[in-house]
Image 1 (cartoon, rainbow, N blue to C red):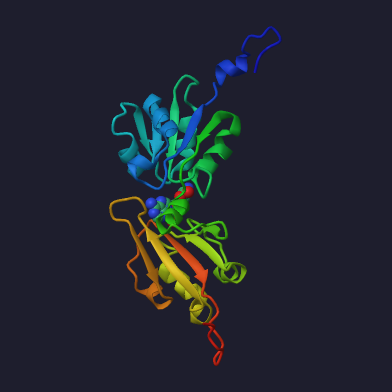
Image 2 (cartoon, rainbow, N blue to C red):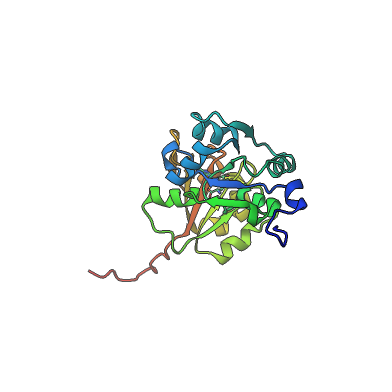
Length: 236
Ligand SMILES: C[S@@+](CC[C@H](N)C(=O)[O-])C[C@H]1O[C@@H](n2cnc3c(N)ncnc32)[C@H](O)[C@@H]1O
């Protein structure tokens, strides 16, 4: 805020704004971050992010590092307390505004104090791997969501992708939906996308209960095409 004479006011001097750049780092591979994101990391004095992101994207930086865990209030208080001249970046996975700590950071720190640099979402990477357009898919995150209605999600969508987490996993989906509805869909699980142990596997409804679970997984679900009626003549 400027006083009438154009000088900074006392308030500005007491509470300098936090200027935090939130960077979407993409699905995980070191070469899938944007050039803009990687330049911002190179210039940063203070870098916050999960152990995985800090390890992958900041090896060459001598900036101070904060490893984020679930103690977000402490993290935001620390980021808000930085002086304007400290270049602070917050690394988040995938797209920084989809089911992301990036959105919470903006809420807590204020839009005016944040810049955002986009990144490829993990769900985008899943469809890139499948070489399938996702125009008609609804993308739904179950990550960390205590409340959701799986039956309604299946009833409302013919094609959708679910971002899973260790609790809301394949077994959980199988049990929540049940065989009568669940067996009408085709499933593909995309795990650890862009990372060395990446796996993309088609599964039947039954296999949802036995496929090995991984913490970074997306389940892509599509209604099976209707079976031809018995006795229907084929067209040659
Ligand atoms: C908190 S959400 C973050 C989503 C992120 N903003 C994005 O756009 O991908 C975390 C979830 O994203 C998905 N995810 C993130 N990275 C992934 C990857 N490399 N492979 C598969 N799923 C991934 C998983 O479902 C994981 O539980």
